Image (cartoon, rainbow, N blue to C red; front, side, top):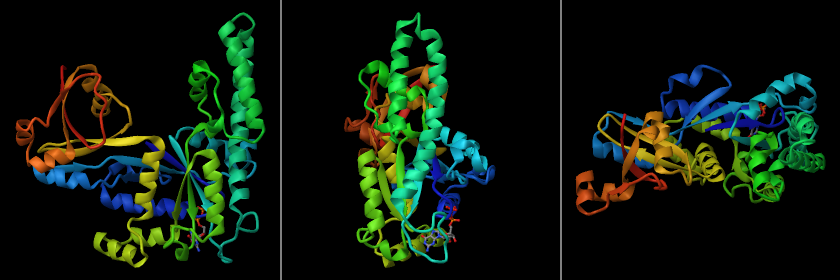
Length: 365
Ligand code: GDP
């Protein structure tokens, strides 16, 4: 899974990105962390992994990961090619979801590109660039579809849909809010890979003093929440500056620091949870002496698809899956004991994998 961090200049994107990747680099030693300074790989915190690894005495523990891309440079006029704008827009096209950082903190030392703090205006500025870029994409599609629509009924129908979608975007709205009329339209829409069709998580970047009540008394945060509600997006409140400090600490220090602030979890953990919930993601686990590992899948994935995350051969040669719930396995103390109690299921191709399933795949090579 790949998340792109966007937002106007000086809202705290780099500060957030650095804190995320710093925290991530410490919890998991991924060699590809440093290939690109704008891409960071972060481990998904999962307490189940350690306990499971202890049970199996595993040599290695591998958490699920999320990739973050720092997409700086999205400014007013980006869709017109200003400030390398088009390149940044192309980067956004490759991510699964967008983390949109919005400045909700006052600080006279940090200049705002538009003079003052105003989340509604800032969000609109960024969204308009994304919308302009989508309109351009749709115009190209429409030109192509027009060529075949005269002699092709399906193409004619799609052309009408594309035009209606373009009109909708031209009203300054996001593709994700567009209501499709039938199955054809619902199938076409995701294939255009529109920027404004991607799920959005708003990161309301607040001052340290706003953290304890989760931004409840900050009117800027209220504005962000209102906008997000209309768009069915998620919001999470963060202080990027504090996150950067937290990322420097070891686990014990971190816990104390968070307690002092009246918080239970770091912004990184909040962000990962928000992404999982927004994208409908869950984790299943594999365990053994060599390795205990978490794998991310979309809710509703069937056993062969989940096996394919490990290796395409596992999906192709899938026979069945031996499945036990994580808690059941832990309570029983071993797979054999869980089997005796009838808690291990032998599941076929139609089995829908659940969060916390510990799975052993049987397959043909
Ligand atoms: P970017 O241009 O969006 O990447 O913004 P930066 O991360 O470079 O931040 C711009 C400035 O704002 C830097 O001087 C940061 O130290 C400062 N900054 C970032 N987050 C916060 C915050 O939560 N509170 C305050 N007061 N300043 C912040």
